[in-house]
Length: 171
Image 1 (spheres, helix red, strand yellow):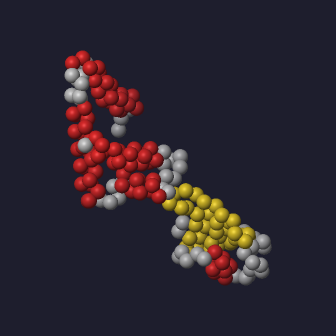
Image 2: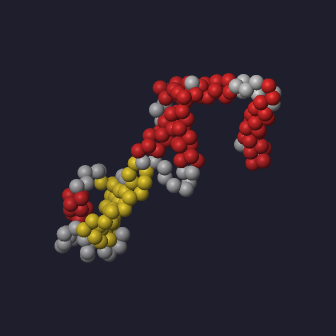
Image 3: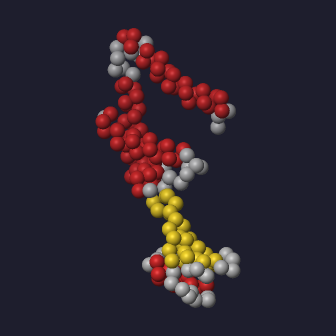
């Protein structure tokens, strides 16, 4: 059971670390910036410039909006990318998000986006962990076991969340 749980534990641990620090970084996607150059001259109408840049960059994503940020710059916005087009130089700065394959999938599982079927798997995993914890208490007999050193260590592990809740003011 312990060896079987290694893969699931790795997924949950990696995802847990990522989700715990979601305020510091985006664990599901990484930010990407690319620079492109359009041939000049560009059309004068914003919508035609947006069409030209989409064609030149081979973008088939649905367009969300096009607006003029200032006299020189047009913003072409899609769901997961924004193009900043300098109408005088033809320079295009593309800001986009690309999925982080492993973490995105691990977070999807960890946060139970798979619903019913994954709930059954996650509950089975939780039962495995409970069995590992309980059976681990009896691995060592005598003063190294539950009534000795192992019991003290297990109690210390249980005190960590209890102390945190007490000292932090709890829910």
